[in-house]
Amino acid sequence: MATINLRSFKQKVRYNKRRIRYFLSKLEKNPPRGLDLMTKAADLETWKELDCLDCANCCKTMSPTYTRKDVVRIAKHLDMTERAFREKWLYKDKTGDWMNVKQPCQFLDLSTNMCNIYAVRPRDCAGFPHHHKKKMVEYMHMYKQNIEYCPATYRVVEKIMETAASTKK
Image 1 (spheres, rainbow, N blue to C red):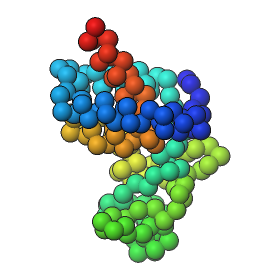
Image 2 (cartoon, rainbow, N blue to C red):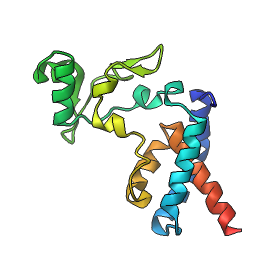
Image 3 (cartoon, one colour):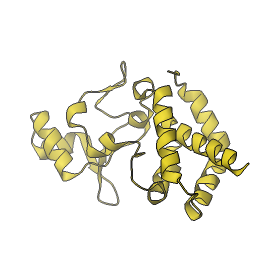
Image 4 (cartoon, helix red, strand yellow):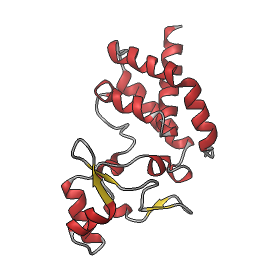
């Protein structure tokens, strides 16, 4: 497993973001045959190389959106009322979504990169980085967003770019 250096990752993203987003936009407009299989293969390869606990950048820099069910489940787990949980840990953003009050996430143990509420974590966290959606093109916006935050998503897209380049030859 490769160790993730978040500083060099951020530099890499800054340098390549426009090129990668352009590639993803082209892919969205004209997806090659077998894109979903290509994505699945890239995802499987990537997880053999990277470990989320080595990074936790999503928990350090992003906030999940908490659904009502998330709030109920987590509040119960923490032995709090839903209202007390929301008042202590969440705020409502301009779109009406419940988000973390602070970053890094209040439930992230920074010494281990582990989630203190992993068993009851928000659905948004459980699904992150959302590589397992059935059709990649329908979730291209997630890939475009997450390449900045998730080294695994960045690597998946790099692998797709490599595969697409080798199939054109």
